[in-house]
Image 1: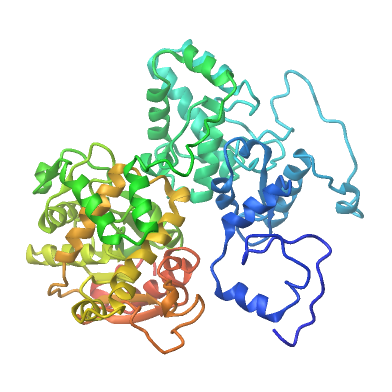
Image 2: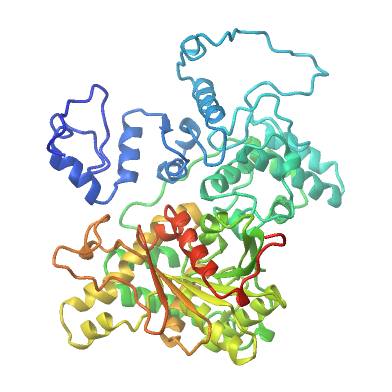
Length: 594
């Protein structure tokens, strides 16, 4: 860095290091850029600082819309409608079209675009657009997406998709009021499918299957937010942040919308037409009231044991089950990818507050057309579901789910973080019953009885907090940072996390015959173990690394515990696929013709 030349910026720059506008001389120091790499990114502070300076347009330059979805949660009540966020590229979409779409959105939002310069030498010229009443091809920018969606020339719209003006909800609800119940749901499916097609950049709503899962259809955290906000404008409802991932597919989301709209659409329409009033939050002296607030306060103050005890106490008040047969209801497994090769992958999410199939969305995208990928559901994270009262209870549920999914075909179990313990325990149970998994893949699974944690706690040293509580606190911080992308942490999610956190301490490795792949990252997410990008801390301490005491094959992936299934997902998938291909042919199935 010291060999580079630096100049003062001509445009004010908000620093992600300080969260403030950079001062003269700040950005011309090599030390600043080294700090930029090492220190935490103060994204929320930077967005708040930009908004305070009057910024109303955010443009993301990069290969995908990674940061665009994080801007919305940084905005306060009333700001979202004034702010435009435009990702200039989206993964697996035509780059030239996406850039033009971004420029079109900026232009529609009031930004000055030099169109003459853009089209210079191309022969393009301005033309009048058709305005005939019988012309059903659309030529104006009218995408329902949160960030405006894609500008698509002549995009065919679904029958239920309304223009996104202030009266869209009123018109939609008036139409619903005239229809019988079955036709209402059919119309709402058309609405959801139409908006989803626009969010995903499809040329026609016919490309969206209402029964196919959102994740399998390519919906990620950003497009889920776009779809949710789009449907809020279309219906006048407040759609929960977790609704898209929790409900699973367009048909179930449409059914949910119909239930929420109720039997009096006209009343909802009146409410939708009325201006929304933001209610100011109580001052800083207000006592936390919800479970989420209380738990956050405990984490913030470093009271990890007290916060966990609170979650466990709430979990004790919820109904529980001892065997799979006693489980009344649970969300079904989710298919994320299809492919001809075997074994299929049956994935176990980490049973923490972020539990859900969305954890595997990016990983599964790399297996589409290669092999089937399913995600089983840990019970208890949705209102009305029972919690397992023991490790045996939840393993009984998972074993039953795996048997149903796999049938007579070969399968491999995949577990992320503490989900790896449950996957391994399920494999042991299945093997004892004569059902043999082809393989087990553990993705950065930390055992609560790791020697470094036990030793620190046993000797009473100051490192006890740094190892056990420090690891737990850093994991929680990472989860809380991702809450806005995957849905708010409800009392059901948090109390379920408390129950599973207790269960995994009783879920140690057991004997299995299946081969095991253990994948871990090269970087720590814990400040004490070295800054991001460093494999070890300055003193060489590597106690932060996860380990597995039983026989296994080890693979290391660039990134940290969280990016393993996020930015590093393609590398993780490649490592898993190569290992599976190296297994004996007796447990692999190649596509016919290969």
